[in-house]
Length: 177
Image 1 (cartoon, helix red, strand yellow):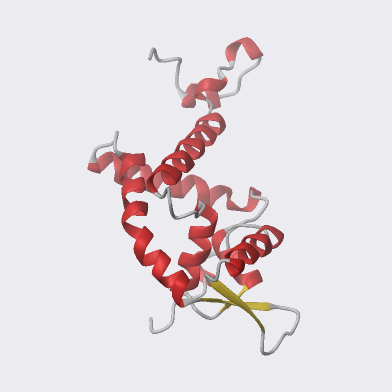
Image 2 (cartoon, rainbow, N blue to C red):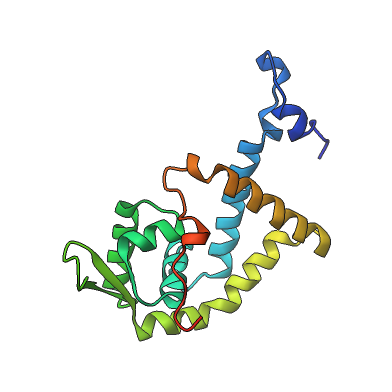
């Protein structure tokens, strides 16, 4: 495919639509990368009936077993309403349980079940394969650079998100660490 220009040039101040090529705009490329990443995730995990957000929720519950729904939402950068809907679906499948919070009865504490833990064990090789496929076109050095730069962009712009991720410095630490 012929090069259409660079994202850096496109990110510079452009005065007319004829000068702007959305095909190389960072926002467009990030959206395309998200579409591709989800498609690869779904291909690799076919048969598990799990979405990327459901995987993130269960993974964080396995990592931090004693967490309330609002805190979990901020840890995986989704709004609380969406997390509540996702948690309800996982609860229906027996992969997590929602319990009343001991101190604040308005909050729900989420607990991963044995079935949820087993699903994570079973799906992890496919998740790893999906991540490898996503980064396959890059050399090992490029993968490290991509990871560093993508994290830099995401962390810098975190506050602009509809559901910003909690500051990693304030993140809930896993038990025993």
